[in-house]
Image 1 (cartoon, helix red, strand yellow):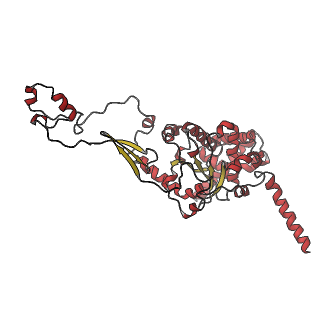
Image 2 (cartoon, helix red, strand yellow; image 1 turned 180 degrees about the horizontal axis):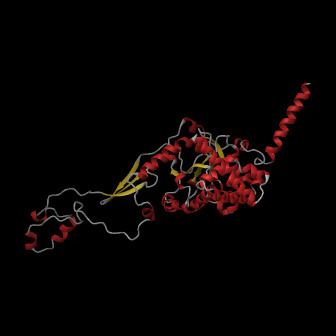
Image 3 (spheres, one colour; image 1 turned 90 degrees about the vertical axis):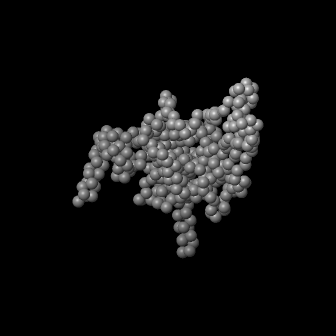
Amino acid sequence: MGSEKKEEKVRERIEAVLRILKKQAPLSMKQEKFCNDACIERFLKAKGENVKKAAKHLRAVLSWREAIGIEHLIADEFSAELADGVAYVSGNDDEGRPVLIFRIKQDYPKFHSQKSYIRLLVFTLEVAICSMSRFVDQFVLLFDASFFRSSSAFLNLFMCTLKIVGDYYPGRLHKAFVIDPHSLFHYLWKGARPFVDLWPLTAVVSSQDFESTAEDSIFISHPRTTSLRFDPSPKLAASAASASSRFSFTVSQFDSLKPWYLSMTNTHTAVAPASPSLAGATPLSARSHSFASPAARSAPRLSVPSTPSSTLPRTPRPSFLQSPSSLLFPFKKEGTAGNRAARDREAFAQFIRFYRRPYDEIIYRGKMKAPLGGLVSIVSPNVKMQRRQGGQHQRI
């Protein structure tokens, strides 16, 4: 009984949204096909089951789709992008969700306008949606950030993508992964993510955390699959170091975010003091002590550390330049960041094979349905039918 009542309420809300849309303006045949029950239910969930807000949002999406001309998007418009594998659908995961991969280079925004990138993004999303099965309504995004050397440029591109997906494709995103970004991107993203609605569904991962399998070794030398940071060559020594009289410089290949660090070294050997009064004195204080008077040198010297003792409790100074994240999330527990990073790596483990899989333009074009596939997708089925009919006539 409870489930039937819920279904009735959901059905009433869906019909109420359709009544509001038809009262504002009549819907065309394609708009009615787009506004099915599953679509309206996603908009209701995005707006907290509010009928008026969902109808307003859906009307804005219909106007945007008509303005951008989604019905006229075809593959012939993006022939260069399809040849280079800039954005494509790599396959489907274990749950049947399409996996979209974006390998955009840093100079792409320089030679293409934002409108052309939005059209490419929408075209790729529409291809993924058309390739979904009946019981699948979400997709996965993989962004290869290794082609960008500017963290701010990639952040602008990534936030633009999330805004379009969140505003015009609500409830469609399952997970978005940023792979091998620049080290500065982590700090920029930490400050910008509170202003992005889909940031809980995003994760920043590194492909170096995953070992290559037998499947990866087949296409590991493919120029389009290997990331700029993915080096299939055998690893060198784990770390290299150089030391001086006071500092040591260590380089580690296991830490991609901070591969180097400085540490203090104590290279001075313990030497017995020439005078009993110099016991406990440091080399710097011993030199100044040598110029003191005989009475001062004969007096017993107490060992006072040059820095404040770590054993004594110190009152922390109030910081007037606190991070905005501390104000937004004041009850953040220790170890939360490490747990989130571990969960992100675990979630990305099943998608690493799509990231390292070679791009094949023919296979990707085979996923496109008419009219997204262009002239080839429209003509090829007719040609096949004519060939079959011609073969049957010849047999007769």
